[in-house]
Length: 507
Ligand code: MV4
Figure 1 (tube, rainbow, N blue to C red):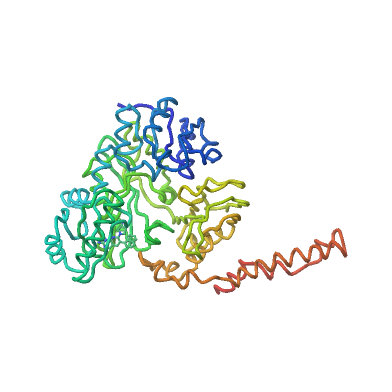
Figure 2 (cartoon, rainbow, N blue to C red):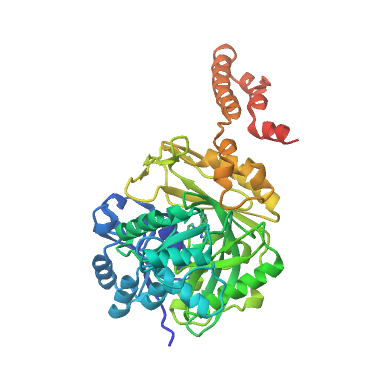
């Protein structure tokens, strides 16, 4: 019942398309790129063995166009499709179309996607299989009367959430009785306009929770294992900014318990493929199932780094029908890994996207550094898609060393032409709450003053050093050309050196 995959169509773009193609190449699988008009010069097109245009820039007409992608899969004789993340990755209809056309969808069945995509159904499924969920309702709130009754039962404060939602859309926190009905209406109308479904449910509000998720892998023979946790509490407007593993909050006992629950959650739906179980963890280390993501996630590389397993390769093997090569006992975390998402955005201007031409890029290298990116010098980041430039993934033996190494790598990262979030990320690495591992989902809000403070002193010294060097060089050229330039013993570099200042400030 195993079927060898020889050609994978990657129904995505950017860094994740490349990420998938890299694993394909390693195991001798050909990759097929699809691209929109503005992506003709994108790196995933260059890297793939074959590439096919699928339409104009807007996603609806290209990367979300199911008919077009299926057509290309047939023309190109792809035996499987990898959806990456975003776009069609959690689209039940797409998974179904692949099934019908005899193309392997590298992901779960349409039934599993539907079950987990509907949060009320997902909650009910978890309750029935003994996975702890946030206290609250099992059903859609039918009317105002029911809403008032249910909120009273659960007790204020509560969260009203859209069943078709996830990621914060159609969600309202209610802490006063007089606001229940207005919040209900607001959540409903947002749900209807965003998802075409106005079903909502109620959960007890968990204050200052941690967002901790577990990576799981399930095969088509009923085996499920977990690959430990990722701490994803550093978020801004429901967008993850920094992820790390292990979580500073985690204990071996809690990991064991949550890991077991994550495996149970996956088994409850006969899950196969790579998936993520999201939990909220409160201050007393109680944990609650929140959602399941039925795709490979952006932050998967930190798990790969500490466990040593290639998750894309695992996805492909599972899709081929092969049993998992590894058992739970084989999984352990070695060292510490942190990921920073590098965005083309203006952090000083409400994090507005800053697409445009990359005029220069120098990426960090060296011990413990991985960058998953796709841009190159002369590439223009289109305005039509997510403005993430790359992910910087660091490994070190300890958390403290990983933070130092991340700071070093962010320092080495030089991009001109577009505004980036690099300086903001450097501030996070310097933030006392982050360094001490004392943070929850309110971290960015709570540390806004520290994170937004322009560290102009360093900037100015660095700029000054460059100007000084240039003037110095010109001066020497005029007055004493030749070896004098080198042997003159100028002090400009020492004065402007960031790392020296950094260390001086630290001690
Ligand atoms: C919550 C919560 C507190 N209590 N549910 C936000 C996104 C969505 N996936 C769930 N979210 C939350 N649900 C209850 N019952 C707080 C959040 C939340 C949050 C969760 C994870 C990461 C960052 C967050 C930021 C604000 C609120």
